[in-house]
Length: 346
Image (cartoon, rainbow, N blue to C red; front, side, top):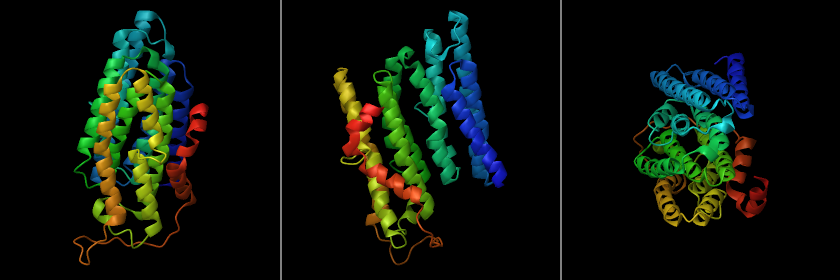
């Protein structure tokens, strides 16, 4: 892709996100979401492969539908209450429509079907943007409207997301699809706590973004798109494979790694809200995700490939690991001891 064109698209992404984050009127927030959608489409389809074109088409149709519903919800609320302010969303029907629209934008169950397919058709770096940066504006809108949202609807969607994100990731062999189902599962945790402690949702999103960026950039460095390729990376980059193991375990939420922090705090908050059965269900459902993270980690570090492999080995050029990967991996593993400080900041 032309560097000037790529610069324009990345700038548009930043602009769209900034407009949505800084707006207090529904029309400006909707405009930011639309700019974001239009800016990411060329980045998804830049390889001109039929799979990439299909992914871009699916993404456009889903996001256009969700944006229409956001506009419809805000207009219905303005019609009933005379308010266009984002924080003044009080009409019950508007709240339900908006929750569904933003769930569709994020990929929460039952609106999750598009996300694994779009991620599978995108390059790894674009997949990282889709999993993190593109989810920030909808999460922010949910954060701003959280006092008006229906807790029963969000709790139901959260449990279903954690369950289906774990179950559907179990038999996947493509790393991008595994990361897509991982994202759906993590979104379930964020949606669960949104009504009760919105700041905790943002903390969870920040840490999820940090760890997911480390995983995606590591996979991009070793060019691993499926598990069979991942098996051959230990002999080429043993240190990177070892850190990938720890980062994946952090993403699974195992102590004493960074990923344990949001799960620990969410379960603690749910227990304070007298929702112990819900907290127990969420903790048990996270075991499903743990299984496919362990599978990835097993393929990356513990399994040595047989002498005769049935697939074409990729040519590995010797290139040094990026400093950003090293920094992100370090933060993905070692932030748990300073969790009291993180909690006071957020």
